[in-house]
Length: 254
Ligand SMILES: C[S@@+](CC[C@H](N)C(=O)[O-])C[C@H]1O[C@@H](n2cnc3c(N)ncnc32)[C@H](O)[C@@H]1O
Image (cartoon, rainbow, N blue to C red; front, side, top):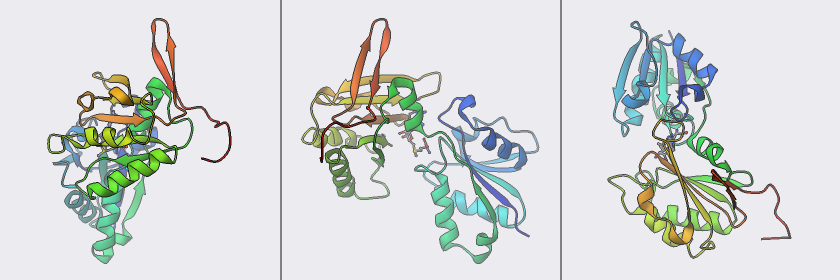
């Protein structure tokens, strides 16, 4: 007998930024799988069981959740932000792809959530107002030379770039190196937004020009948005600066 598997995102942290659809899935499920701090964001009832695991154990967690769903349970796999952005939905698909046939029969529902770059962008204006892309700076699952190529090509193509996983204790130098590379492709005045813990009580949003951007402003809870040559900063008296990327680009081909 096959059960149901929801894959949800909590949003960036603030309860109001979790979608009603995800909240409804939480109230239906009885088995929860996720990284402990994300499970802590849910107010689970006493009849709901949680299996917390480390952030680096995504494939094992996805397999455990699929095993439970395949036996008929209503299961919820929990990510932060959106479950499809550098998160558990892909791990669940990877597990189904290489797992036993019965996992393909599980009734799977991936529910969208608010991802970090959207939460950060909304706090500062509209930096993602024109073409943009998202790149994970983690070289745990892909080689660093691919990251360097993608950064450089995205910058040269004029995309605003949202960087996820910019830095960690195990990856201390990558963000500084990324700024160094980008300085040869973008003007020194390009705005860099460090959006830390967006939507949480300890939120901190900092803007620096690329020429002076300091990787020490970022930690694991930071999404860094690199502006394009079109991205602009509006200074306002007594209010934080606004950063936006206009919807139009004057002129012809780039
Ligand atoms: C493994 S990724 C997960 C992304 C998540 N699925 C999402 O959609 O936001 C973790 C990275 O997301 C970013 N992030 C997550 N929550 C954030 C928040 N509240 N504010 C800023 N960045 C955040 C950080 O770059 C962090 O290193």
